[in-house]
Length: 417
Image (cartoon, rainbow, N blue to C red):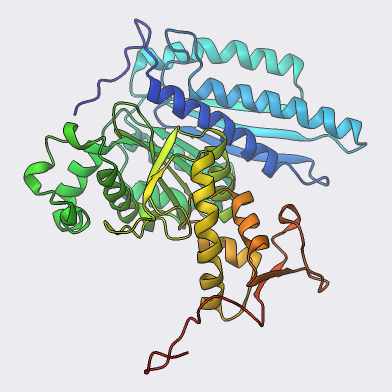
């Protein structure tokens, strides 16, 4: 499957999958800013944003592309945060952003500049607490990356967000993704590609990986090329998800391998890379606010990639109401077993860190499953017990109760506990 690049000179058509990606990106970036700017004592927040395949600004229908979304959300957040701070008697907050925009197309870069500059002029006049510096690149991303990295490092930016929405092919090396995640203290990446491109890439890089993961479905090397008839197959989606995760799990501590839910099949993937569980936690929550936009086939509890063709727990998870109900039921069973692997007690921060590569679940569902479970209790720093799901915090302790109903983790040789 070959994906054609956008023709910005004649007006790029916005496809449904791109519209879905942009909505998720906007909402997540809004949450990103809210979390990073939450401290009352904070007077300044600095970040760098790198849009490696930035495009020409607006699509033919008038919808803003990702660079304009970043600017719009930065303005909205700065204004809202400071209005709230003023009403609460808090000191104002300045946001300083280095925005690096790259596109291989000279036409796209010129178009983007024409649309960004008026926005920046308006911000300079009306939003004095927001400071945006824009740098433009007109290169293949891999060629531009060394200079982009140097620019971010020289600016001493610790919070760095990369948006790598490539046009269908493997234009970003895995080594580059890894380098981004290890080079900056707090880095996150949104990475988009077409499934068929990924499988072709993996087949070339290491065909044994693909065959190991897809062999139980009867998929052979000959099946890799004509994928169109298999892209809507749910089992295929589950298998491909594990291929994605195995391919990229070494790039970052937390990898979100969910596909864009297209009516015509599972063609596009939007992967989120992060090194902090809070980022993956917020990303999961945003996906649930956009139910049916992304999809996962498999378990919805704490072992989402443990696919078994005969397991009735496998289902199509669309981050919707029915999916959340299924997830919560599985979480009630899965969480005590995980706590038992630690012994009988684990800090909530460590618990979060251990689960967010294993679950698509919403934070509220995880907390609800903990409170509803008769085998678990949440203990505060002061020794009290949490009674409500929405009061659980990262400084609490999750503990197995002394008297519990679930079966023991360990068994004797005779098969008895």
